Amino acid sequence: GAVVSQHPSWVICKSGTSVKIECRSLDFQATTMFWYRQFPKQSLMLMATSNEGSKATYEQGVEKDKFLINHASLTLSTLTVTSAHPEDSSFYICSARPGPSRNSPLHFGNGTRLTVT
Amino acid sequence: SQQGEEDPQALSIQEGENATMNCSYKTSINNLQWYRQNSGRGLVHLILIRSNEREKHSGRLRVTLDTSKKSSSLLITASRAADTASYFCATDEAGTALIFGKGTTLSVSS
Image (cartoon, rainbow over all chains, first blue to last red; front, top):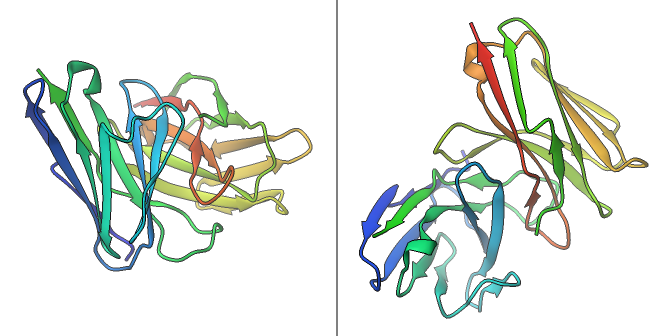
């Protein structure tokens, strides 16, 4: 149980275009989902916390107008990278936990490898 | 932001040997978790240890937590080639999100 599905697994886009990444909780409801970014050989950096039915909370230094997050239902959060540039090329990973308790693990999607040319 | 700092950054061992990774963090925590990541994939949860626990076991994994030193260690016993991956500690700093350390890349050769 507690499966998080992320789509697409990889995408190549041209500079200036927008890319949408979907994150779904398949067998549980998630009022909160988390988006991370990971550069090669580095750790995961929290980008934003996605809240169902309300605005996302962005970490310092993350542009909310560039990384649009929509959490329209209890099982789906989307991250749209707008006007992508080569420096946005990275591995984006979403996660969620089935339940409000902090004493439970996060379940991660398999990530999306974004390459901007 | 990053909370944890793991060491070593990279570790190479032979199959059958034990692997120990350490993690330090900066603020008070509710729990500390260890995750594994195979190259280019998402993370898999390994073990969670609460702030009032000192040691926890799961199969070949043993995790310790010293809140006075703000540190944790992950021991993998009798390692296998399939254990080759990156290992991250993560803490629940400031809310429900997890903040990850820099990770240890483990390479187990047969």
